[in-house]
Image (cartoon, rainbow, N blue to C red; front, top):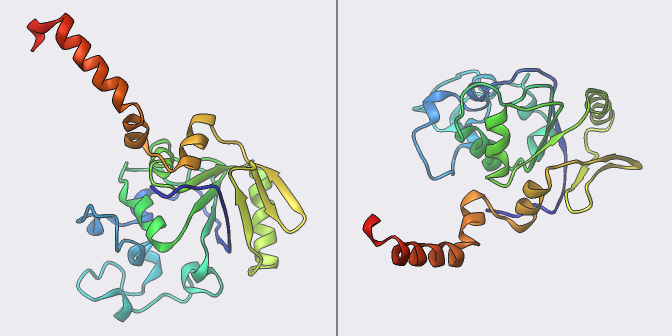
Length: 210
């Protein structure tokens, strides 16, 4: 998993509550498990005028000019700003893969769907919880200066926009794992030697189980 220490990027303003995982990546695109190629279908139903067309290559489809991902400079954005309960709905990990494949490294919102939030941490995408007041301020700032990058500094536990700063609070275990580039499997493998020692000892002390 790609480590996350600090990232600066253009903010994509998606001013909407309760965005579910089917809106992030519609169900017809859940046919692969290799984590690649999903970015072209991120928010597919709103991003294209021919929504849900699985037979036409994305480059040949008709983009919806009213949708934020098709607007400059947001089409180059790498930080997604949303409203409360982002990532609610089904538990599909593919939704996070689509965000990541598009190039989004961090998602900022007042709250997240619980499973979606865990999937973000396990795939190197940082979910940042800010107060409603701070989120509303960020929406205002990025609309006033859309080219201005936001710096998400996990190591320094800060968000920075020009001379403005906000504290970034993340569970310490999750923070350490992201900084080291470790998902749940990676964290387990760090303890592989102790696990092997336990298995040898248990086989010796309780041979009837084997």
